[in-house]
Length: 480
Ligand SMILES: [Zn+2]
Image (tube, rainbow, N blue to C red; front, side, top):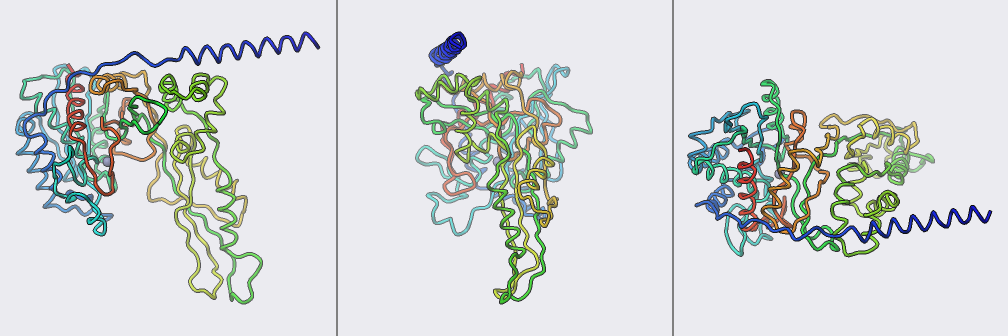
């Protein structure tokens, strides 16, 4: 007995020693200097401002484009970027999606795609008075360019075009072919990008690297980390909606039965919400935590993150507490529509609810279905798939891939002392389609703590715009 206690004691001391050593040796990386930013190309800010003033609101559900406006935008591109339009052949897919091809000297290298979308979400009429600038004014003031779409996603599009035009003016010739792909309906159906990828598939194209909007830089995400964190999107969650229906003969509300359709469905939903799909650390999230762990000044956090071999469960539990981080460790399921009843004195026969799920890589729509069925545990509730839109989670881009490393290098060059870490995208972008034809899809634009997406006061720091152009310039120069 004494011997066993002795072994246990030694074992415990060894574990404590490993935890301690791993914690204190996990120190921040050395100071990393960025490169001096290149000056703005002439007219870059004016072009950004003009782009905002053309109200390319995303087509509505019937896929009706405001043709005149989208043609005005095309004209604006043609006059603002003469070298691109002279030298890079343009293919138009489904009216307003553009592909520009900058042919490289070595066609044996798979091309690079720089992509963005230029449709914007509408400005809520009732919210216009809350803006501190005219929503479609393209005003330049207080160090920002203001207006709907300046972040999402015209900054990327204009950034790519400015970088390309400037390199063409300098006579730069890429070795790797570069494709510039711009979508016109990302904010609604995303059909454009689907059609573009379908077109690429007919040509049997595959791409080395695809860079699209998504991840950004934050100094607010982790308060205990004093360096900016660049989160690079390397994969997207899947999406599915289920329709739940309870049916039970209704009747007069003066003589109610013990259980009604509303009761059955409410109870089922309650049971569903009391359960959660299992949480796990998928590789990109684990890599994210490992990369930031050396920089936190919270000792306990540093200890757990530096020793995930021992504390993985604790880390997962703490991530589960906040909605934003919870969405990164599990498939989420939440009711979004609940319908029943027609009059206050009639017990309805049907109650219907829609539950929306965002699926973690490694899981499927069927897993969600099975979990919902098991959690509600009531055969009186019928479950069907809502077939408007549904996608599987995407494969994830490896942090050791050439694509990730190339973007990482470009970020390090434009942002000082930045921690570059992979991240999972919880919303969908146009690039999800490209994952079928590339293992190197990356979601990132170098903006820091950007504010106003889809809301009021959408604005872009002028210095971020400059970083944006520099970032794309470096990616282009990397094709040599
Ligand atoms: Zn967007």
